[in-house]
Length: 447
Image 1 (cartoon, rainbow, N blue to C red):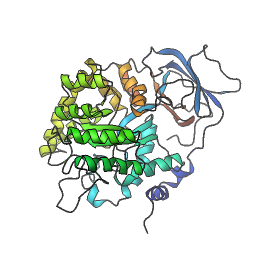
Image 2 (cartoon, rainbow, N blue to C red):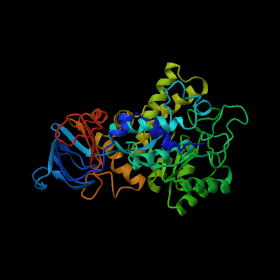
Image 3 (cartoon, rainbow, N blue to C red):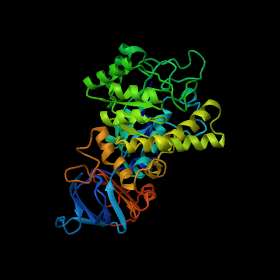
Image 4 (tube, rainbow, N blue to C red):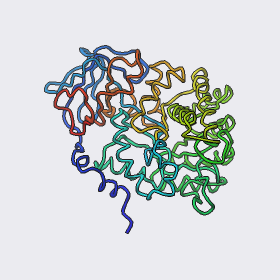
């Protein structure tokens, strides 16, 4: 008898974790801190206040200009900065991270349900890192849907999730599983491979049928795949136009994995919502992205990880060569996008790097990519919300939005690395982390 993935993950999760999952938020809470950044790109507000009732923000602004309801619980976070919950627009929450020695052979050695079991802890780590919303761009077996169901039904804790189901591409391309003997990993439109416009449309419909909120395709080769050049164009323009057209009819956006220069341009011309990675973006491509309003999700964290692995010998041969080239390209492409007015959203490709280390991307967007600290914060808050199409509910600290609030120590506009060290995490009005242990708002889920 086949046991449903979500149920199996719940059954095998630590009993203490399951028992301590908090219920929905009730009542009114006032969060105070030395500073507030609302996510719009506006100036830092000194002496910040956020008023939360149940799962929504009622007011946010400067202490003294915001009415404090009588009887509200007060949580004073001291010398910290209040921010909107962080958004990671490119994750792979299911399964082993690349650092796990078993990751390369997981597709043929792990039980199908093992990745889903690991994802319960991956999701917890991600939420505790301040990321209250993630976009999951590719998972086997629709395990991302099972994890989301477990979180929604309070069987696990984790971020809000926008899911793609299976990412897909051409036979032998980056979204395929290569390097195995014939017959071992022969995928089709349901599990990662679709050739030609008609089959690609069918792949879109199949993913949406089983819960996909966004469609993820591979427009070029990749770093970690076997047997393809990292910049090689894969899908043709007519194929990608068919995918985007079908997704649009079903009210879905398309995210395109694209490292190579020409593949980036083809994907943008086809109308995708975002270019993932964009390592070898050129001036013409950047101008085209700006004109079309196409987001760049640079995933610099993944570039740093694979570069370090190539230098240390963890990656060898063609994969090491591709890793070094892509990482070098990223240092230029993000700056090029910034100069040309391309909208940028934070994405980590977590799964290549460690889950829970997502905040590193804020720092790398500044040190590698040339963004200011405030631009980096906007990329990981309001810009991410716009890309996901969820900006009516998340991305800024504003009345009426979900009460997703994070606090970091000190002032991130002066030291962006503090974004890697959140001390307070609230999602939907429920506190999951409070390192200062202030007030009665601390839930049992604090690690």
